[in-house]
Structures are given as C-alpha cells and as structure tokens.
Amino acid sequence: MCGKMLGELGAVYLDLNAASFSSYGSEKRGSPVKAYIRYSLPDEEIRINSPVENPHILCLFHEAMIGKQSVMAGVTECTKVIVNTMQSPEEIRKRLKMHAGTVCCIDAGKIALERHTRVNTVMLGAIAGVSEFIPLEAALDIVKDTLGKKSPSTLEENLDGVRCGYTGYEIREFEPDEKYEPEPYKEPENNWGYENAPIGGINTCYGSTVSNDLSASREGYIPIFIKDRCINCGLCDSTCPDMVFKFVPGEYKGRNMMVNEGLDYHYCKGCLRCVEICPSNALVEGIEWEQKELKNFVRNKDLLPDSINYVSVGANSWMTSESPN
Ligand code: SF4
Ligand code: SF4
Image (cartoon, rainbow, N blue to C red):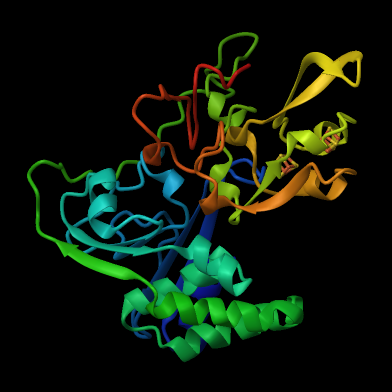
C-alpha cells in the first residue's frame, strides 16, 4: 500500500514519471514483502520494471528484517537507510554492518500506537521527509486520496501519522568504515523448485512453516496471559491462527486435563483474536514495547541477551531450541 501510494504521489503530485511494483512471497501475514519505486524527471521515461539495485532510499518497515534477508545488498554511500526501530542510528549501523551511508531511525511502532494510526503511514511520512524533495502536503494529499474513501473514519489519525513521520526521525551520516564490506546487489537464487526438488519434495526452508517468527507483522500490541484467571476452556487455542498457545497435561480444580501454560510469542502476529474470544479476561491487550521481560517474548533477537541460543531458520525466522516444542 505504501509503495503504491509513493508511486502515485510522484506521478500525480510531483509531475514526475513514476513506477512502482511489489514482490510478494507467501500471502500469509508476516511474510516479507518488497516494494520498489522509481521516479524520473518528466522528460526521462522509465523503461525498466525490475528490482532497484542501488537504492537512493531504502526503508525497512521492521527491524526484525535485519540479518535475515540481504537487506543491504546494493546499498552505497549515497543511500539513506530508514529503519523502524527503538535503537539509535549508531546501533543500527552496527547491526546493518553498513560500510557507509546515512541511517535514519524512527520508532514508528511507538508513534503508531500513540497516534492510533498504522506503521505504514508513519513510514510514508518518514520516506517523504528523508527524501528532501517530497513536500509534506503532497504526502498528506496522497493519503487523503487513498484512504479518504476507503476508511474515512481513520483518515485524521493516518494524516497525523504522516506528519509525525515527516520530522520524527533521527539521522546520521557515516563515513566509510573498512570493518564492513559494501555488499553488491545480487539476484536471489531459488535453488529449490519444481524442476530440481528431490522426489517426494521437501520444504528445506523452515521459515515458511509454523516456525516463522511473526514479530515483524505485529502492530505494537500483544496479548498478555493472566494465568490465575484462566479456566482452561481452550477457546484461545482453537481461535489462534498461529498455534501460539502451549497446553500441557496438568490439573485444574481437581481434574486432570490439558492446561494452558501460556504463549510462545515467537509465533504471535498480534492479531488479538485470542483476547476477543477469551471468556474470563485471562488474555488482555498489552503494549509490545513495554513487555520485554515476558517469558518467550521476542521482538527482535538482537535486542535479547547473547546467552539465549538462537538458530537462523530461513527468511525472517529464528528459533530457540525450545521453540519447535
Ligand atoms: S480462552 Fe482464556 S480462559 Fe480459555 S484457555 Fe484461553 S486464556 Fe484460558
Ligand atoms: S494475538 Fe492471539 S490469536 Fe493472534 S496470533 Fe497472537 S496469540 Fe494468536
């Protein structure tokens, strides 16, 4: 949606030639999606429609993408990298292993929660602000055009999100550091497919299974489990689309039965359907960034202590030795 809006913004409000397209993986919520946007001056036609190899602006809508995909491939000293994160540009530069360039950090998740808007509109505002050639008014106009009819009741909050994003980032330019190598752009190779899969077919990428880490799809809310209130009815387990709840053999009110042990946040995408269905208020809505101490809570593995042994298991995914259980 944000990529589409940026493409239209260039053509409609900046009098530029513009092209935008997206590349989706699985349609499952939480899967990584890439969107590419090109602008050119009115007298320069855009005749290519392929991934942007050396972006002037690269925007990561969630810091959980860092280290999982080759997000830095093709980044040069001229690139401005915008990241939705609670961390500083210095910390993000280290995590990105960025040779040189500019880093802009914005805690879009927190802004979105406070302003009752979505991360997308905050990031759209940040992209416009960082670009230095997209006026705030144009960014607001394209959001009015796109969301004004679709969801007029949320328009004011979304416009507010754009305004906050436009100026709400911290920016640092970094000189080349020989510690980090520039990463050249390379087309991703898909080695497993219909032509060369082994007979019987196996999925070698755990990342597209239930072990996928869904923290990147959360909008800032997570369910909090209050065990004392739980009546072990199992409704949360049958409602949750992502098998987040762990039921184990136990005892409840003198009866031997499966009891709710809580959530493994690794799999939770924050849809809060479990909160809606729970009849005893044992699940309540919580703010994600306030809950770092929760057992099994994962916002981003790089924010967690080194003592926890994480294993990379494919695109956007990692797990602990306990996760598969
Ligand atoms: S729906 Fe609520 S009461 Fe029922 S098992 Fe889940 S947490 Fe417990
Ligand atoms: S919010 Fe609840 S229902 Fe949604 S994925 Fe997380 S645990 Fe499952």
